[in-house]
Length: 391
Length: 151
Ligand code: SF4
Ligand code: SF4
Image 1 (cartoon, protein in one colour):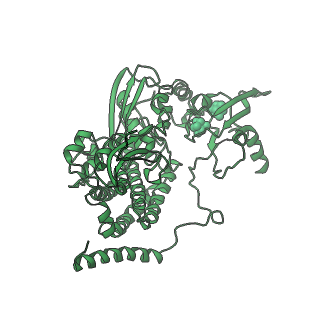
Image 2 (cartoon, each protein chain N blue to C red):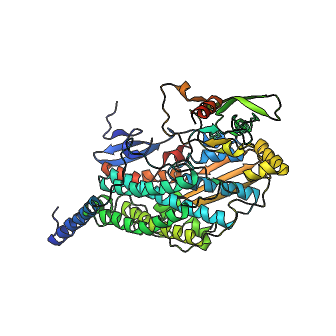
Image 3 (tube, each protein chain N blue to C red):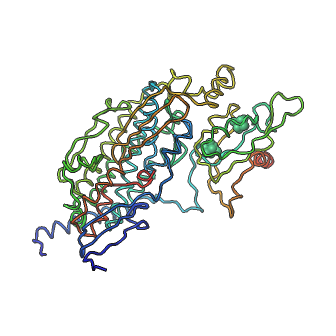
């Protein structure tokens, strides 16, 4: 056998820094990485295929399980695709609440990210503070949706229900408090000499490379490319809100960190505006009687409503034949759903464009030629969620 | 690698600033709770396993008319054996058996929404535990009778 001067090691699938079950096959020359190859599929549940045997409302519950750190964003992306297929209009109140919840969810996802990323690099303190605020957000979301992780709250045609009266005061209290908390996180990390040494000039990607690899989200913006679906192709009334897209310049781990920290502040701004400007009105589309079931009180009173209820629940609805693509800016990047309808009550094909999957493909490019100890920083900086990669 | 004195001071300062955050947090109120001695308030919309509610016109019996819509709509196929009988002098059926396989239920709420007689709701049971899979096959009709007796 020919002696190789390279050593091959497996990082994962049970490595705590791979955030799930990612396996990285690393070829090392001493401490330098010569080749890296991500192996995925350990969490594959066949969500795309499974959805073909479910009606449209049922398939919604699967989307919670893609990126489980921001389930409401997944719900939103899926609903937007189906609504595009059905061509229904969503009332403003529902749109604003969707934005509000998606942005709260983005903050929660970024908090989870900064906590675990810092933990990976040895800055454990932040974990406790970030989880404290994340807990507040999850409690607020639970107040409205009843679940912390898999809410299935954003529904085709609107929302599952209106928000309870205690919801908005708690959101407002959180929004007032949060900027101060981000200041604390930044005091812990942004100027921290150890943090800077471990992250600056690590795993850089230039703007051209990012575009070549189809990278989206904070990783792309850290390289200085201004692409955010919320601004580029506004959905769900994002054009009504005033916010900025934070950009980086070097595209290294440190810039990705900075971009996400700034994004949290911007999301906080959006939540604040949405809570203040929240219009009155219905929480689900009123002009789509074949999609949105009637209110429960009506079902008890009115025989026509009862029949409608039975029809929707027995058969679901049948969107016209066609193909649509709808995408949103999730916390990880551009999350898209490509749906093909053959006119039945089940999707003919549902293809998901998960941002983590495409961002992960750029990982070998980032870490080849770098030190093995920096792999952890690089993985952390792209913020992958395996539930979404493996589907 | 030697750092210049000014870089050294700046570096140390950055670490001390971080320590300041920790010290500040030390004097702030405690946010954790000592479970199980101390319980948190549960959201009124909390989604535990589903339970049957009493019929609107007769609180003595469950309101399920055994139409099976919930079982048909459940994305996980967790509702089984929905059967009912028509009792003397009643317009509708009453469920006699209704099994929820809680091991596969994802608490999505579709069954609650789809019920035409509005007789399903989420319970606030969050600490279900068992030794075997069968412990989580709930017979909701029996569970309803038990609840009725204890309340
Ligand atoms: S909550 Fe969802 S998964 Fe559970 S029984 Fe009801 S429909 Fe099925
Ligand atoms: S939908 Fe309601 S009434 Fe019909 S079987 Fe289910 S619980 Fe009973």
